[in-house]
Image (cartoon, rainbow, N blue to C red; front, top):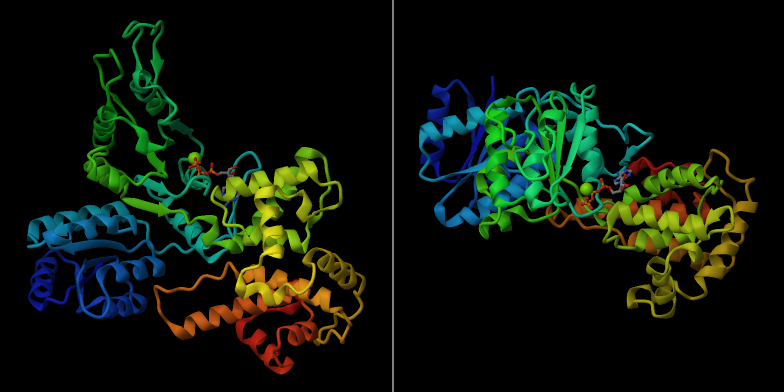
Length: 518
Ligand SMILES: Nc1ncnc2c1ncn2[C@@H]1O[C@H](COP(=O)(O)OP(=O)(O)OP(=O)(O)O)[C@@H](O)[C@H]1O
Ligand SMILES: [Mg+2]
């Protein structure tokens, strides 16, 4: 039986919604505010949450984020007064399924819930997370960060249903890979995955591109042609850059999504198809709806199951795995045998903000492959957009970093690396690495590396939870320090100014294994 949680500070409303739903054989529970809602969602198994916007203690929007972070497959429908419609529209960006305007009519409520639950049927009860999804042609979809593991688990769930998916995210974040992953992990995988780039097809040809045409139906149509919808029959149609289709095509697309049939240009018969639609955009469709440039009804059709890809700067923990993957790929393509990335170059890669996301990272690594003559990628072989940050940082460090830059990080680092690499005798299981001497310059260079890595540290201010943030900071601090000092406990304790005992206790607490950073 489906479990529904009604969240509103208005007891009368909760009661009337609950009684309307109990009649429709749902199991209904109630919460008085966002906080109670989040606690209940974390503790119980709900399929759907009906969520008010303005509530004491925690607002509906905050609760929505928490619910989606806990389990993205829970359907959330926003209950809103007319005055809050803007918030409700915004909430769809955060993953809400749809919204209902107050006063709530029982029949509208039951209809919307039925529809939403049908769309999500089968989505639940499947748990999965993998650090890599394999795609055809040796392509891999990499994700080590918590954010990407969450996306992978969503992909796993969504690949088992036929509902439309809307993938959103900045340019270069991997939207096309998500679309492929959805198809090649689905029961449709043996049929075609067909892409239409909506921004690349000229307006006068797009209808024929979608639906095909009969011979002679327009100037230049000298033979009959089937459209991409028909070509993708049984498979998946990926509508890339969906924000760029014209209003006229939006209407036609909506019809085919609703009725699963269409008429080719110039034909007098309808064609029926069984196609799963996956769409992607980096445009703000909600703003476009407000400006009248994108149809709201089409948006809701497509946005049944949204996937929001985070920017690379929000998941810097993926950088190392992605770099490894691109190095392997370019070693094959360029017939080279680059073994990895030097510490300083890696610190620069982590410090960069990556406006072009993974595509930019891929280009940076390829650039380095062409320039680099040694066996590993070093900072001089990185493009100026990345390595420039280093000289700027060294010449003019921000106030909070001056303390770390007491000598040339470049020469210090190289010296430190070779010193540490040549000292491979003292890594026993006790975690005691002896007190190998390293110079001040070497230590300060290593500290620079750790400090750079920590610049990517992100506070979880949504939670405003001191303890959680403190622990996350400690965890990342220790990892960065261990990496910089190559997993050596004594050096790390000394230079990070932590008593060795405390360091060992904390490593145990966070499950960090020093040897992994040797
Ligand atoms: N997680 C990842 N693992 C491996 N490669 C990735 C990953 N994400 C993106 N890439 C690679 O980065 C490049 C850009 O990815 P993709 O084309 O999917 O981005 P996009 O979001 O569709 O960008 P745009 O909005 O510009 O079309 C591709 O070469 C893709 O293979
Ligand atoms: Mg793309």
